[in-house]
Length: 464
Image 1 (cartoon, rainbow, N blue to C red):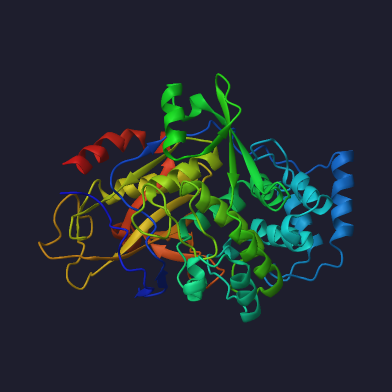
Image 2: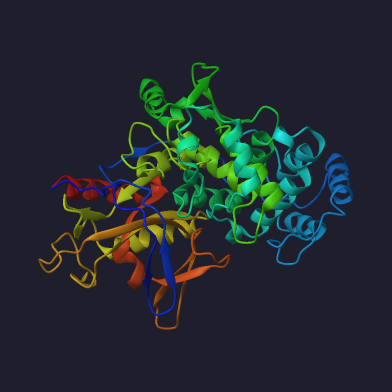
C-alpha cells in the first residue's frame, strides 16, 4: 500500500457541513508520499515583551503617527485607526519585538516602508495599513484572489509577448479557487507569532530590491553540513555567501506578483487579498515551489507536485522551518491507499491531540492539513487506529490547510480547536470539536521536541 494523497484530485470547491460550521476547501495543497523531517534554523523564541521606546524609537514612532494621521480607516482594521493599532501593538510588545532574521523590530520595518522608495509604484501607506491590520488581527489574512477589472486585463494582455499562453487563454487569470492555502496559513503564523519578520518581508518585498534575505545556520538544518546543503539544493533555495557554518537565502517573488499587488492596491474589495497578502503568499509559493510560481495564474511547476496548484507537504514544511527558524517535523497521520481511500491511521487520536495541545501550550501555532472524504460510504469509527474502516470505501474528495491557534475545554472536558481558515470568506475564528477534526487530520507540522517521542512509531506504521 502506498500512503499518499494524489494532488490530481479535482480542484473544485466543496462544502462539508457540520452542526455549526461550513468548511470550504481549496485545491489540495499537499502530497503525503512519505515522511519528511526537515531540520531548520535554530531560533531564539519571541523576545521578552518590550513596551518602552528608546529616544530613537520614539522618533520613528512619532514619525509614523504623523505620516499615517490622514490614512483612511481600513475595512480590515476593526474600525481602528492606524494610530490606535500602533498603540495596541506597542502595549502588547509586538511593535518592538525582534522576532526577525536580522533583529530588526516591526517598528524599524514600518519606518523603512514609509521612508524608502517602493517597487512598481506600490503605495507605502496602503502597505503599512495592511501590515497593521494583519498583525493586529491575523484572522483577516485570506487566500481569495481579487477580480481583475477589464481595463487592467487588457493592459496585461497587451504587455505580454505574442507567444504567451495567456494570449490564447485570458481566463486563466480569473482565479476562482486559489491553491495558496498553505502559504496563507504560514502567513497567518508570521503575522501572529513573528510580527517583526512579517513586517520585514513586507518592507523588503515591496522595496526596489524585491527580495528578502534569510540568515541560515547550516548546522541548524543538519548536524552534517553536507546534508544541510543537500536540503537547500533539493528545494532549490537561492543561496549566497556560504561560510563554514552559515548561508544566506534570497527569497523573491515572481514579477507577476507585482501586477497582482498593484491591482489590489487600486481595486481592492472587502474579502479579497490585500497587497500584503499578495506579496507574502507569492513569495512563499515561489520559495516552496523551486522558484516556479506564477502569481497571475496561481500555477506552479517544480520537482515534487504533480498538481499545478499549491504546495505539497514537504515544501510547506521547508518554508515554515526557514521562517520560524526552528526544527519543524511533519507527521503524516492518515493511511491513504492507491485508490485514494482513507484506510487507517498511523497513531491514535489521543496522541494527535496531544501533539497539537503541547505545541499550542509552547506558544506556537499548528498548521495542519485535513481531508474530506466520502463519509456516507464509510464512517471513521471514533478512535480508529491503524485499521481498515469497516472494509468500505472512504474516498478522499479534497484537502485543505488551516492554522490551529488555540484550544479550549468545556466543563465536561470536551476539547475544541480554535482555527484560522483563510478560505472560508469569514475574517473570524472558526471552532471545530476535536471529535470532528481529528479523524480528518492528515498531517501537521510541529516543533521537533514536541513529537520526537512518537516519531519512530508513526514512521514504522507508514512503512507497513
